[in-house]
Image 1 (cartoon, helix red, strand yellow):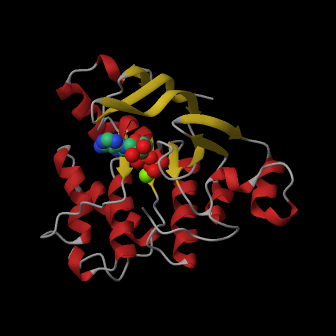
Image 2 (cartoon, protein in one colour):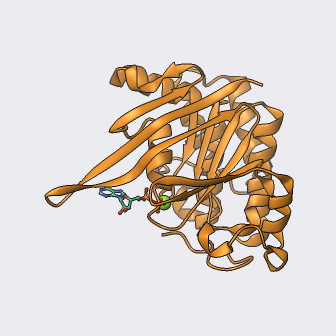
Length: 261
Ligand code: ADP
Ligand code: MG
């Protein structure tokens, strides 16, 4: 096994009024290549902040983040940007697609930024969009696409540079059940088959079945990590679940998708 990611006592404080709010509080965990992890927890528990730090979009107040053996905190701004483009793929709740480019062009843009828009890259862009069920709509502009379709373009974009680390914040928030399963299964398969590391923030209980492990955050901390297959079975069938109190996991109810927010 190869270590893809390690966080050591990562803290993020935001200014709030005269003081600060601690959004992430000494979070340490690691992720192997080929591992797909679900990050769960109630609203405000620090999931998005954690993901944004892993994406190098936010700097930790303290602690270390090591991706592919490289310490992000010791990099200059320019180094971090280059590292992000090459090694990290992410989708956040706001998709931030470029409005005047088609879905396909939005995906290809990421290749262009790396100077790698060649035939092989173009082919990969189309293949990814097909895998994500966007075969028919890849030449439409973002405003001509539904929220779920935009989300799938963003996911294809996050994968196009074959990143070591794939990060997705609520990737299924605007998808119907069938699409949600398809998208998460595709993400999980790509992580497994291509030996990447993936973290998905989700509120949707049904999606954790694709995860190899569940990291549960509460009040900025890792409340618990759920690994054994038994517990996954328990999560899939909450009625029979005596091990994990469901209300602490941040899910609204069994089998219910919660809207983003
Ligand atoms: P989650 O994604 O689990 O809902 P967030 O990471 O968005 O959690 O937020 C964690 C905490 O940090 C919350 O208390 C939130 O209000 C606070 N927070 C998040 N972003 C900011 C910000 N830009 N400025 C100040 N406080 C923030
Ligand atoms: Mg969030």
